[in-house]
Image 1 (tube, rainbow, N blue to C red):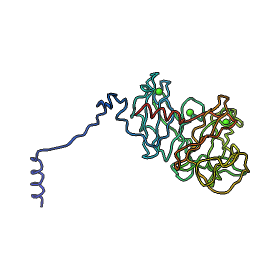
Image 2: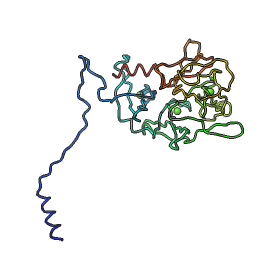
Image 3: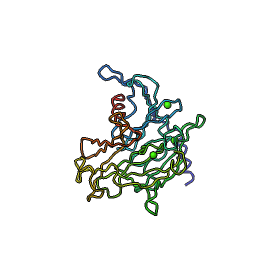
Image 4: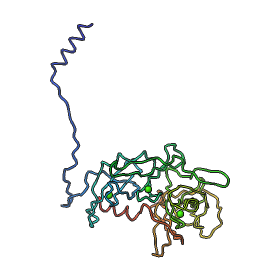
Length: 301
Ligand SMILES: [Ca+2]
Ligand SMILES: [Ca+2]
Ligand SMILES: [Ca+2]
């Protein structure tokens, strides 16, 4: 048996070695209709969350995209060009620096240090949200610290998780204009209403850097979406409790519409090809923008 093994080793030692090597090349120029594409090898974009973040600490806001269709992160650096078509450079070196993301990812600077922090579905799964703090430094670069994997709030005399799910995105904004981030979302069995999770960081600590939430109301804005779909408002100034489930998908865009700092909720729905705009009279700060998303798609393609 030992002789057979020795012969086998001798045999393979004299067989010429043929190996195939693959090397990634992303510098090949791609021209379409005489136009040279700026980021032809950045990959496609299907169903992304788009957020601003300064990836490299140069003071310019770069781009973070999380494609919900294939769970892919894509990052672009802002090169400072005033031409929006030329401003974004594909920078895949930052894509692996983000923490584990599930279903969706939104960036918002909750602790007011100028660095966007990350909110996503918790590694615990279910209807729980996790928060990661952006601890970028010039020496260490982009790095994250988990603040909590169970973002909770006061509810009556107890505490509960701030309800989220993998389909419907919450919105992060300063709803009451006191400087700390609040959250709009949906309750477990939503009657077509938006729930308001108010942050008491300013009230309790005098600063904006804490996540001290209380379930304020299940009927923010005093309106209700139409039960059964079509992504329309069913009623304004209607009684707070109406029956039946309705789950619009996203309310991530809270744009200022009229220039008077009043803001609007813009629920989207994957079942319909249109979105809806409902204006309000409260002051909030816009986070990830649909307008920006459309602009990016225009720039990258
Ligand atoms: Ca930057
Ligand atoms: Ca921050
Ligand atoms: Ca606030």
